[in-house]
Length: 226
Image (cartoon, rainbow, N blue to C red; front, top):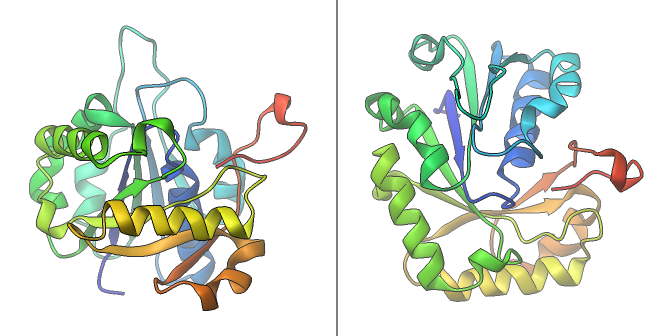
């Protein structure tokens, strides 16, 4: 693995927080280097990766975020220093849409280096990601404020409907993604609930990334949500 930094962008509800959590925990369990997780989502009060700080910490991940108020969002310190540190892994969960993506615009010179993988997550089952026009518009806005280069962006498919996702949902969602995005930008991998991964892998032409769900809320009766 040549990359040491991983930045996740995507619209609210795309599942990027769950994917970022999974990667951070996987890296920490390998034990190769210290892992630092930055929750830079300053655009919504719910479904933020900081809510899974306990499993992150239990896995050995150092979690960074700042408490904030609606009128005074703040960014956790240490981002630039750790992005330059080849002796550690950095995983960053960035807020949805162009408003949230502004939080990483100042780090653009560090994000566009070979050791940083910037990933854009698309979930075809979200109402705002069901047509190419909307995906293209939002992606353009995000790239404009983050100053990330489209050529180096990693497209990640996340065809899920939360805890109730079926194998059929994954297959149909992947088909939609390849139809919408495939002609213009390669989809590098598809995120699949871990319990479904082996069953769908032979039926997909894209690499499969098994995902566990960590974000839970009281009204879900203990079920996690992507």
